[in-house]
Length: 302
Image 1 (cartoon, rainbow, N blue to C red):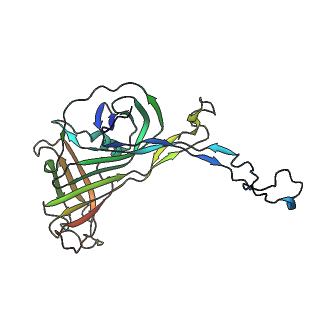
Image 2: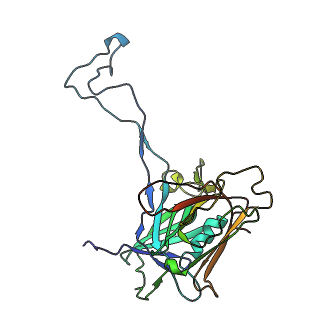
Image 3: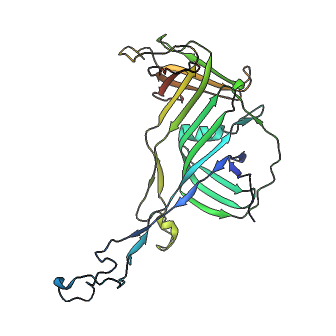
């Protein structure tokens, strides 16, 4: 029978994450050799090329040469940030995105059976929060393999506090003194793009039969250049109008993000960044200025 409403639990590093959505799936196509025979062509059995013709209403074999394509296991997940006195539910995912480490995911549909994903890597990770709203986390992942899991997940009934805007603190330090000084932030978000790609080889699993689906899986998942981008939105007109040759000569600006109580934050990270020109918009609404930034060097430090 169908189970309406609740979508399931992702188990990562023994942490149960209540997902808003989870759609990591295997994708595969049937690849055909495109022969020259149309539906009504009569070339088959002819003794010379001039006998090729078309007999309307006569059906010839179509798509008779095919093969299975390589398998890609990828997709995304999103969930609200939750925290207690010691940790937040997105800290592990952030670490995997920052360092590019491998990890496993078990996802339980409707708290029942589900799938186990192995040797996963983060392709994209996004942290976003707006004034008066909750902290939202989303991530896209690639996995090297997946298998069915009929182990019923334990019932998760523990109440969790959703992290809200008022528990997020942002501090800007700019050695060039040409950045942001206000604390009147309206919106903050950043995205880590690791440019992940599947790597396919002729025999990824040497002990498997050529007829096994595993021979079509990626041999590895490689990460490309890590790109960190984001933006701040505020009520005051501040930020750089242009990037000049002198910007960054004393080092990039540092954006420090803290979540939780100001005295004892439960999540913190710094972003080494260069601010881009402010984005102004003329509209008969509240004037909110957006200041984009881009991470440089080791954007999140060592």
